[in-house]
Image (cartoon, rainbow, N blue to C red; front, side, top):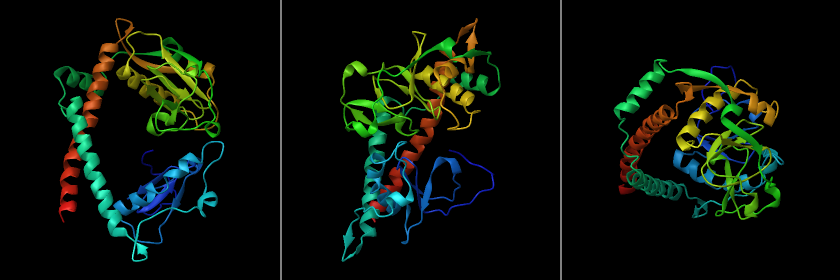
Length: 317
């Protein structure tokens, strides 16, 4: 979530965290954990590297299909679970895991490189207009007004709540959006009655967590998801990211999980929005988000270039 100076237990690096949804992550650094998030740490009895740790974490992938809000993951519930790992001469084959993950990294980074080239995202140089937008933002030279969420969006309930324990979650179909903060809120995909699909080009809002994601395509939802549909025709993925950012900042003053945001509470929440001539300045908003995207992609491109070179060296050894 971020960094903190709050006094709390420091967990060792090269350990694994598992959250209440069953999502596992390998941590190469020391860290602290928030007490309300129901996360626990696993320390391996064996010496792990980053790549072997990532391989072992991948063996935990089945956990997130077993747990959710209705049945939260805990150490007591998973300690007797079995995972499958490669062996050689009766011992865990760490060498295989190391090389396997290295090859996967090389493949995925090459795919990333191809994607960046195909989409034009490899070009992360800002235009003069984008540079000006960033400069104006950083120096406070933009005119902001405070609006209610209801001034910009129609807030409504999803057409139907699909219980994760009562549907078949697939790898293909229509997105199934739930109250997770991962993967754009998408837990998987469903093939259900299309009459219950929610419109694309909207924002999904998790009522318990105030997690928001832009949903480009039609989607189904789980429990406690509200749909924010723009009242403006020129709303798109760029302006959506701007509004998600300013709404997230506004809702961050509330305690996570303390209450569920009703439609009324969402509608009356106030946010700051860039305006020009008393109208929402969509042109500036889109330019700013485009610039931010390029600044982020720049780091991704640099990472990809470095990772390709590093993985080549590992594979060539």
